[in-house]
Image (cartoon, rainbow, N blue to C red; front, side):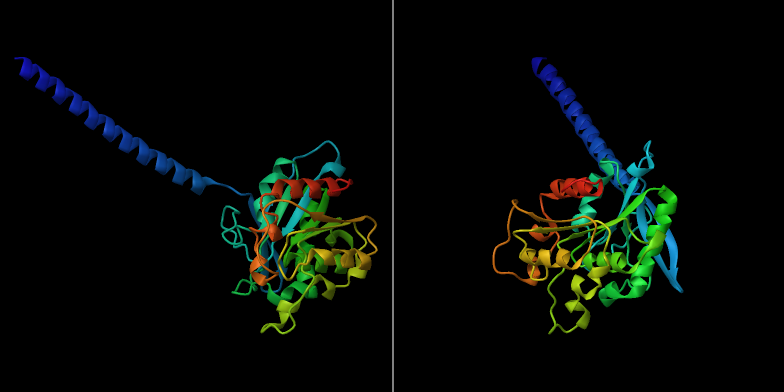
Length: 300
């Protein structure tokens, strides 16, 4: 009898274990499903598409700034990523490409501080392997970006700045040096600017730098930021003073960021990556805060 009772208790306990394990499996499956569903439901902003040129459209991911009491406090930043410039926005305005780019990583920081953001994708006719390639210095590229700026200014009734990093610095210098009026930005920030070309490169456009643009035409406020440990051969931090030396900007500042993990080895193209000192790895919040202080009229 005791044995039977003991057996009965064991069976009962075993049944409970089976039920408990089944519940765990159901909960785990449900949790995974909820996580996957939440990932699918992530909204990175609004996808805005404009007709930029004949047979060409430009899209950007727009997160509007909050509506402040004063118009002067309404600020939107046009973000120009490096590399190919093709961030490949999905239908929820989330980038599928260049996720490691410093500006892409900094979008939540800007938004949390009350800044609107517009992450610009490569236009529809420049989304191949090379993306924007040599188009970054073209007058038509400046016009495309000018249309984005004018559209944002009309939407927000506030200031619109342009921030370009790495190869995106060429695009930023292009638009701010060429345009005026409603299409022109209120100021420009260049981070890890490309200042050294590669003339022997197989593709001629690889040699492009910000010095290919008419920097003498930049009169809006200008902030130039580099990292002391940047080993990218294209963005030597000791060359940043050459940029401001050529610009008659009404307000300008050069900042050299220090700290965070450095890169080993000599300067090379391999160091021109977003998740490195070239992209201010682990210092995104610090750099974004300095950019926002400068845009608001202060110093980095």
